[in-house]
Image (tube, rainbow, N blue to C red; front, side, top):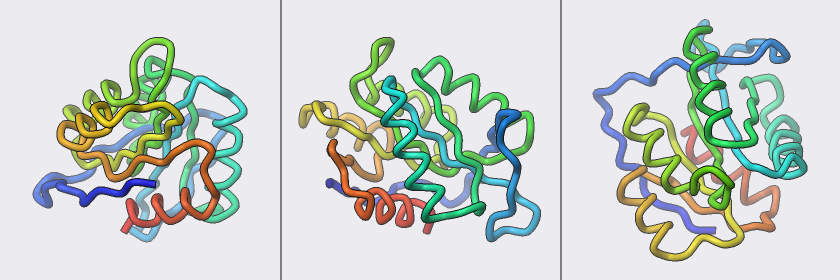
Length: 160
């Protein structure tokens, strides 16, 4: 597990994001604000595991969304924005068919600089991690296979 210091500017308000119809909005610590955690991976079993572990720890404090690729993730983000749900954290795989995770997270950071990003990988090289750290404000890189405690610690740190 590699963690990086967040370099987000404090003057930018978080951008709202969406939720899909199968999720029920919940309240976060801020009054009347619904927030989400989005996981992106091309392997459904990984997405199921991430969602299950996050739900087990955080309960109904957040909306949990998953996407099997970057294109689907953008659709989810648009839906969440339209529903006034803020995406707080994105956990994204590095090796995906349509785009590498570092490139996807850089695009996310350019459009939504307040979203905290975590890259999940079994294969990312040091150059990709360094690029995501400098250009996507990458909070951390979580190596596959991960331990649930590592995931929860990183997400808690991202939410702090």
